[in-house]
Image 1 (tube, one colour):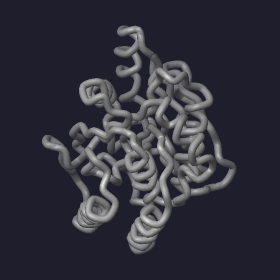
Image 2 (tube, helix red, strand yellow; image 1 turned 180 degrees about the horizontal axis):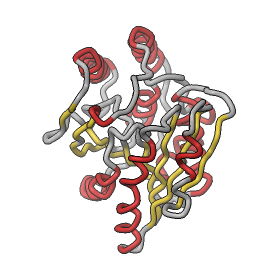
Image 3 (cartoon, one colour; image 1 turned 90 degrees about the vertical axis):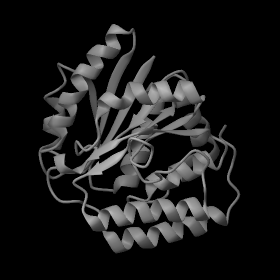
Image 4 (cartoon, one colour; image 1 turned 120 degrees about the horizontal axis):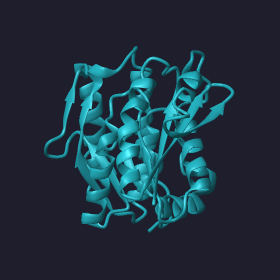
Length: 254
């Protein structure tokens, strides 16, 4: 079985090497268990040395860079990464998504897998809001936005088993994402910005995929550089996403 780790990246020259360094012992541990880790870095038109930083790990990790010539946004990078993983994955494989800014710990991937087996889940969220989860170094404004978005989505478009709707660190069954990609075609991820993570979860969870959570300590204090999130636009997009999800029938994906 192969874990396909998809990393959408935009101008992450400073943070990406530290994250990939943390992937090296994980790849070694998985290999010892007869499993594999493959890393797909989707470079979303970076203007710094993100691609070069990723390629310095080619001798130590199974790593591939999938480039966008220009910056197209997180939604497009996530869509490209999932499509690339599905092209390479078998139905028995697993696809992980994670932020490329070193705020998530890839060593948690085996625990997400254990939780997936324990709960017979199709999607497992690394959740700040599950018991044992926490946030370190997040500004008060970002904390309020994340919690407010998850609360709003829980009330308006609930997904059973989910508390954290916005975290980018998740583990998916490749078979589930493949069915969803076939059902939705090019519309699986329509949001351009940070709301794409909530969109994907809503389309999967409300389409029948079983969702579980495992605790995450988000280490925002390890992030290099400023956040790329545009606050007011993101808030408005959450409301637009809710209206769109509530107004259309959702195809079954599980």
